[in-house]
Length: 286
Image (cartoon, rainbow, N blue to C red; front, side, top):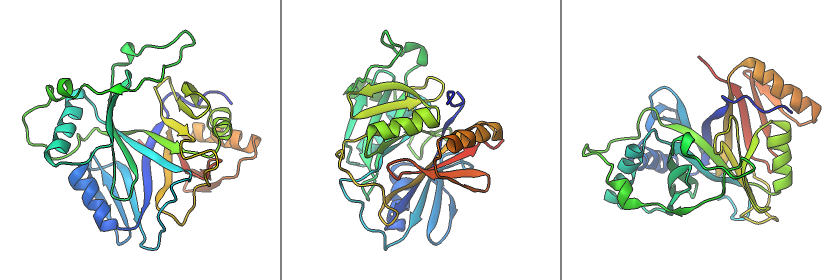
């Protein structure tokens, strides 16, 4: 498989949730997204009023996702500037929002938390790409240092925080999988993403166009973790967005060659990765 198109990026992430009302409140009031559309069992959330970033599918009958299972490790919302990240952090401090951590990865600075149903969330900003430091193989070292919170907060503005910036996007997704080698074969050898960082034999960070990562996979829930299930909370699917229908055709050819099961719905490719995580591959709309 040739490398996937360099303009490929991550689109929306759809979550299966038990308490839809509670999750909508969290993502609008705490995270700062807006409601794009609202139905009885489905709510689409946006930053710009046009583009879905997170879709919540509600069903009280969903079981809680087992701890040792494949699924979403975290979704990652990318804000445009360091000042934007500072404003988000200050909002979390003001509202006494519980955080899981805050890290400097050298290519990005990130804040980590969970929603009320234990879905992981990262909110981050990218360091200028020209300042990323690669090793002799051209890979990005795995670095996770404490975030300089005081330096970050010094950049916040004095305006009252109301919501995420409208040009916030879904920067990447990080997935729990069952087997790194299987995930690597699917995402790199079939779909054409390229390795950027590897942590031993338990985590892999891959991307299109040299980005630090659009997708990460890990086996931190255990190599004996069960596959993702449709009847539990958590990830239903996430979108990989390619620039054109020509790229969709290239992906289809690769799937056919490797005999990977898929189906087509409204010109989108729907399939599951080897761990059972739902993937939708679609062409970018104008």
